[in-house]
Length: 273
Image (tube, rainbow, N blue to C red; front, side, top):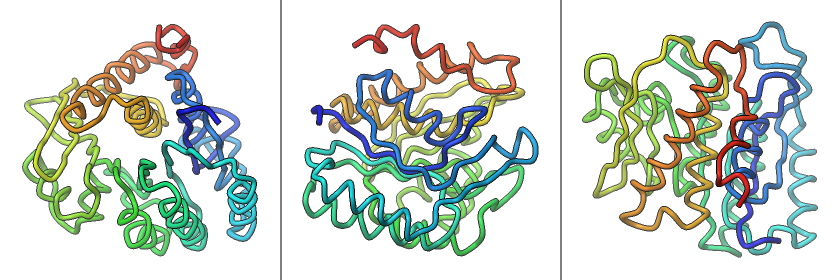
């Protein structure tokens, strides 16, 4: 294993990069090795129409993770990224294994992207899945990456502005919250890295339309910066700035397209490091 390796557990899609299909190339472009485990294989994101779903049974997910752990292939792991789950049993399986990984590697950085809903649809996973993520994965995480809706739901608090986001984030267990889609000034949106004693923020313009997978991409880029060593204490702001700059470049390259154009990742100097 290289010095920088991430275990990524989320959905995998054939068309339109979301979940691991967005996170894996983003991490690789930063020079991070990735071991990807799918929770479900989809023909496409439902936003592109009816999708064929091939979920991974919790027992099969457990078997995959147990074999990887038994093989010693997670020794020296730098980070873990969790995303989309289809049922609560999957969440239980992963939280149990992450507790074991934490015991062996206390310095591993666990980022939980609690993919449970958004402002347009509300919860789009079954309630038991959302509750399991809130009760089991979020407390295990060093970093969580909720959007505005997810942060409000997880903390059971109103989040309508930066102050609300800070209050909600600090009511939760993780040391760091990467809060996205927080209303800013006029027509801007804030992305905020909120710790117990500090806040870093980047404000961007609100785009009329963005492709699916933007949140998955940002979570991976932010974790990649942490794994690279950019986010140590006060340098969290540098990690946020770097991740947001790459995300905005990706969104510019994908403007008007139905799906993210990940070939733009190849154009970054970091993609060749």
